[in-house]
Amino acid sequence: MKIFLIATGISLFVAWLPDIITSIRNGTSLDLIEVYTTEITYVLDMGIISPLIFVTYYLVRKENFMGYVLLRMIFKICMCIGVMLPVQTVFQLSAGISTPIPALITKVFIFVVMALFAAYFEYRIKRETHYISSESEYYSIGGVSKQSLL
Image (cartoon, rainbow, N blue to C red):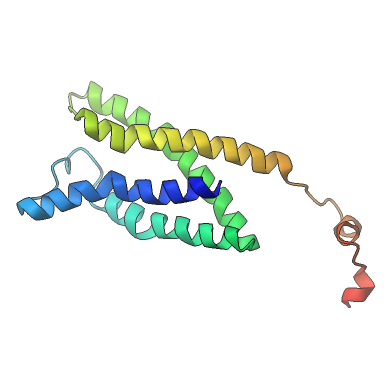
């Protein structure tokens, strides 16, 4: 699961950074700008989501509860994107927008694979999570009594 987080954080850069570097080197705008939403995708993925994934990795390594909350959120985002991108690509292709094979691999296939791993890890976490149904069960799990906490 930790490897998944590192791979996901890095893959967001792998998906978008080559386009940006090529565009800067050539002094032109992005090649596929009219096909994708806008540069906001680059900003969100590389500036917010990827750093959040690395923060989540750090928190999960430290076994911080917030790390697991963020982890479940990241899994859900990955699964949504893994469903959305192939559908979006089908509509783009049916509208006559041609997308090069390397772009399909870096911008669709990688995210679909990540979504499959996210679904797998989400299932495992959900299956292994023990939900507490009452206050007394909460205090009995760790052998700590409510009175000792007061």
